[in-house]
Length: 226
Image 1 (tube, one colour):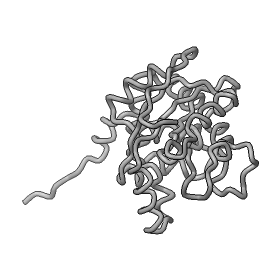
Image 2: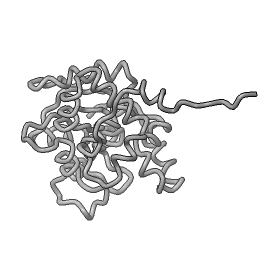
Image 3: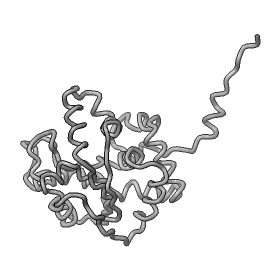
Image 4: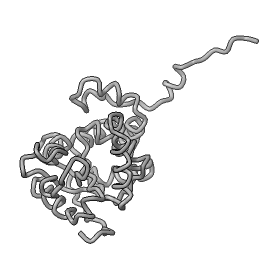
């Protein structure tokens, strides 16, 4: 029987080109990890298909992803978080109710979950089971990286490390688990988290809507009373 030959270059030739991840992250080695991350690769393909390569980079740099978590709604803190974000100079351009299941927990926080205890994972599963959260895409017109600035505004998950003016302070987040607010840390994470939280059709519908430079969205009706 003749020896089977493989052509690994064929599959790569048909693959959509990824970004220069080094332009989207400041962390050493993260570009290599994201170049192999399925969520990141798929979301980048959506961005370039919908916007073109140049605008995809601009979207990642100028946009910020926030998920106002179910614990923020349960605590009645969601409106305060959104108002404080707008007061800090961010402009909401798109919003969707997003429910995360146990698989979503492990995908969204994949690299953190490697070090999490089983008990912490179970608690996160119970937290997201409270209901949906609100995914908000924000624009920042200051010229800074929107995701980096929003991540700094979010504040640490440890209460003693916060300044007193962070979004987590505004929400009254009491500890490292009930942190109320999640944000993508930098442009690379903006891309990846869109791949985690939305299937392709929803991303295609969301991205052109949120890429309009002057757009401000209306918030969707919330299932929570906050």
